[in-house]
Image (cartoon, rainbow, N blue to C red; front, side, top):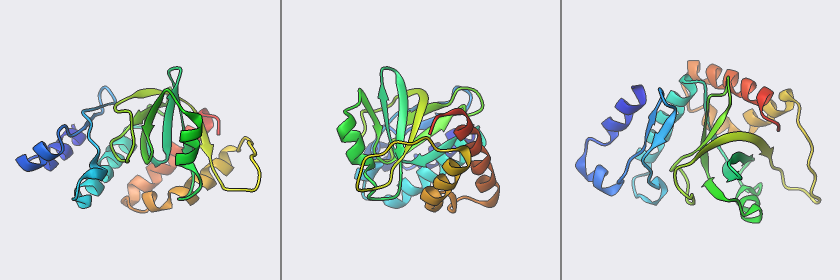
Length: 193
């Protein structure tokens, strides 16, 4: 209900409805994201930021997270690349050539306490549209001289998450920052990093 109210408030101006047809709505009861549109292509970045922040808050309150990363789905299972700007998230997605590209910029994760589900969001430049899949892998990227794949401990994953998501985390109000940390800790205990 909170999310629907937030997005309907954004959509009250009929020019916004026409320009961003369709808006998306996160429904906590079913944990779905309905409707889709790429807000990055619109001139009003302020409403894009407000929309992303509103989605982040309601997803965090509902046992989830919104992360800055590039997500994909292969064979009905999802994963995402996370890392600082320039780490190669978009390049990794291109090289992977997934069945579906969820988003090259922001993803929602719900149901962290049971079976984490990865959702596409419209907050990016490239996406194959709405999609939600069970989350099976999180890949932290760093540029280096050689390719290396190593599993991270929960502690190391949380440290990297905070380091690489700090701009997103610090845009929340205090109660949501604590809840985001709790949800991230649960997520990294469940999903391989």
